Image (cartoon, rainbow, N blue to C red; front, side, top):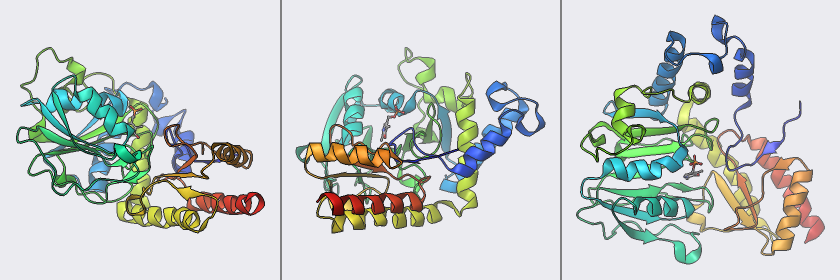
Length: 360
Ligand SMILES: *Cc1c(COP(=O)(O)O)cnc(C)c1O
């Protein structure tokens, strides 16, 4: 077996102990005589898997009782439409656009109502987070929307926007479970799990119960209603059983290493290794304002597209995979999610240092 350091933005690297446990249980899950892949979602054994996953997530994030946890398919992208469809009362939605993902979400919401872009950092290719302390929030806004960590551009909100009493909806796809989070500050938190938690094909929605609106357009497809999922314990239809199982393993793993406080410490320590190098380098530089740098996604460039391509090729040959930057930023991007060990980042930095010495 030979595993590389995988810096993919998603689907992304997962904790090795979790993969090993899954491997051990693959053919016969706990004496059931079958794989979780082959199991009825209505079976007692799967119900236990699902209940434990939810309970462990609630414990990790300290989720208040008046919030529902929903396991939904369709990726984070399906939430771009489910959010306006379900949270609509006045049909006015305020979006803060700090990157490609919040822009996509805003574009989708326009199909269902009036979208106000109350702040944006588009003028500088989303390399900063605008001041969100006094925004022109619409009196009729049904919610204020953010993407809390912009995966492509590499910025993170360091404090939440002042929503002037409106509920806050946050896409946490690429920072889910990376640090403690006060759930009560939000109306809804959601994310696809394939960035920082588990395998692709599952989204987790954490939503305040009173926001699950039954009085919505009756033509709304049944799968796209939050009440469908909430009223049926995320099992109105067949859920992503495998995804729920694997995420449940990751939740237990995070608990075992000390929870989200500990995870945050490790993430801060790990990102510092890379940022300290970028700050000291004369060859590479980070692309975003220092005060809003993401601990999860780290874009950096040489300033020359040909040199960038050469570095990407060299990293790949040396066993560091998926470092090519997104086309809208260029250069390189190291996604250093929860499951990336600090050794991986140290090895990458050693490689880049040597590369700089030889090529500068
Ligand atoms: C990847 C990503 C998405 C889209 O996720 P899908 O599950 O592919 O739909 C949305 N938001 C953010 C922040 C992402 O990183």
